[in-house]
Image (tube, rainbow, N blue to C red; front, top):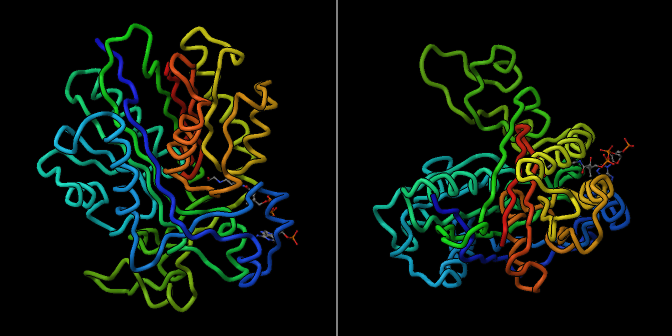
Length: 349
Ligand code: UT7
């Protein structure tokens, strides 16, 4: 059975840079607070009415496909990871497919938030290894800035997130020992509401949510979106930051070690760790815990913020473009986020 490899990679970030001081104009925050707690200096915001999660994904995908040395017609399966889709349904997978003219091939949307790319890579890996597909396009893209609370109430979440997209083409490789060595996926739904965007949704089914969110008391019908959600401005993501932080610094090292142990390797064997860019402090904690040098960890959250499903492919692509990921390198991807979900992938580049 051949291994699967990343044959092409690309990313796209919108031009518009938004600094911490820009945010401090609209909410009670400061450049100092944001940099100290998160490491973020600026992030990109997509152009409303011109760009979407899908169009950013398309831009990244075009680069990945070209670098894989194939054309759109060669793609035989699409996986799209996002938490900020253009539509509630259908997903961005079919929208990207329509844009790129790959009609007829399967398109799968996955909703695993910060772990979306690692989950998607694992799915692509299984499909390629099994021989079912030869060119799987995996895209992670987010248009967070459309759905954030820019009042002071939302500041703990809003300052963290940025927009952008990353994409890879996954293909079989005949090269012995190269490509994706293993992937490891986990979840614990106990913490589902610790980092969540719950409205609009069908959770009227939960009795305690009926009054709180103003779901109408009707025998049939209702709506995912209620007037009360609008009136209470209860339409934004919420996060218990410290709970997420504590779990993240535990699960990142755990799932990285799981990948290394599966392959009989040690932390010192890693040439490049590309963690999901959740918070620079989390990455630094993981680096210290794993005793990794600065040149073994890629961080770019300072420039782009946390781009959820797009953060790993953006960071991996940047590292590769700058020559920090080279042929034969051992690359480890690791993610943790909403769900909670977490995962890792080990790749011999
Ligand atoms: O990728 C998805 C996974 N997400 C993460 O990994 C995020 C993990 N968590 C974090 O990164 C951190 O918890 C945050 C950066 C979100 C928050 O940092 P923190 O050090 O945990 O702050 P906190 O939530 O405990 O809040 C400390 C104080 C509070 O004020 P009081 O109650 O001490 O007066 C907050 O109201 O900081 C305040 N605060 C802010 N102040 C200025 C919260 N957000 C802001 C802000 N600007 N943006």
